[in-house]
Image (cartoon, rainbow, N blue to C red):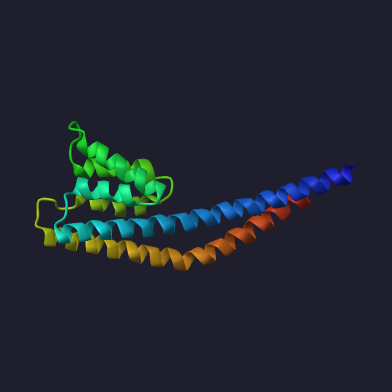
Amino acid sequence: MIVYIKAAGGGMVIISSILFSVVLCNSEAAKISVLNELVNVFSQISGDIRLGFSSLPAAFKNIYEHSENDLIINLFKALCDDLDDKENDNFSTVFNKNIDKYLRNILQEKDCELIKEFGLLPVHLDAIMQINYIDELVLRIRRKIEEYSKVSAVKCRMYRTLCLCGGLMIIIILI
């Protein structure tokens, strides 16, 4: 009977350590996915400005109405709602507040700071300057994505190995 309990406990430890490694690997993939989605969104906004279709609130509304990503939908819907609210200070403050609210748990602090630079978009300048600003920001985000993509595979292997070894070590200590 004791052997069965030990075997069941050992199996649970191994399974939970493997699941923990899966969670860690998924967090790496989620970070890259969110950054890719934001690159697409910023490129779309740049295109809207380039073609002179709409203002920022209208572009944000277009994004959340046509996006399939729930995080992007919620982020840009909240941005539209907050920009429509007359009590808010300015675009930068509203944008930063919503980035903190929706992306703080997924992205690292330095990544959030990079994304928040979009809030500093020079809306008082002409369309060409705005497009150049957005394109530069998109280029910097793409460099981050490349950096994370290179490191992600190595991190996932490391997570799997460490979690499995940690689970085995716990089993050895407990048995």
